[in-house]
Length: 159
Ligand SMILES: C[S@@+](CC[C@H](N)C(=O)[O-])C[C@H]1O[C@@H](n2cnc3c(N)ncnc32)[C@H](O)[C@@H]1O
Image (cartoon, rainbow, N blue to C red; front, side, top):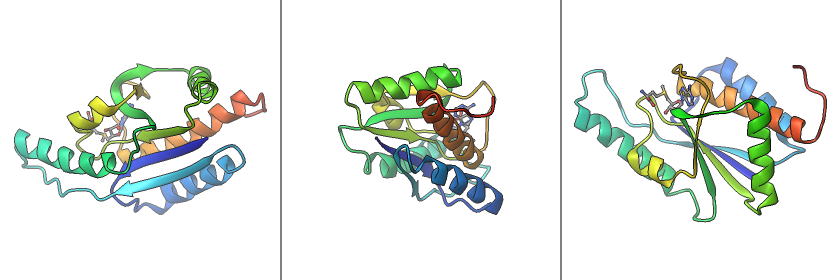
């Protein structure tokens, strides 16, 4: 299985980078996984609604340009569907069973995802009703993907 994680902007915090690298390493035996960073747009506090949409559109175009038509796209969205870790594991397992070998998880930038990216999504996944910083979301996501593979292989992982 080929998994891509799309994220907006460069990851700066060392502690997050270390955590993400650790889970990417652990995921190595289970799947081919890569993190793709697209450039972020400047988003100062005083942007109008229209300007905010423009920021999301530009970031979204960069993401969509890198996603092939045969990729199953899971966007991370606060308003999406909440799953248990076991349910996420089952979703991933079923995608593999039905021949969907390319999965892209897409995390929005500081303003969220564009309408075009939402439209392209096959699934919208929520990690709770709370808002997480997009860079922290990357770490939470890679840990849950790792957990999903451990669950699917019936391998022990701390509860
Ligand atoms: C800082 S949040 C953006 C907040 C923006 N107001 C919104 O509603 O999308 C950045 C990105 O992190 C992801 N994210 C943050 N919290 C999340 C949650 N609870 N569940 C799923 N994704 C989340 C989403 O992809 C979001 O676009």
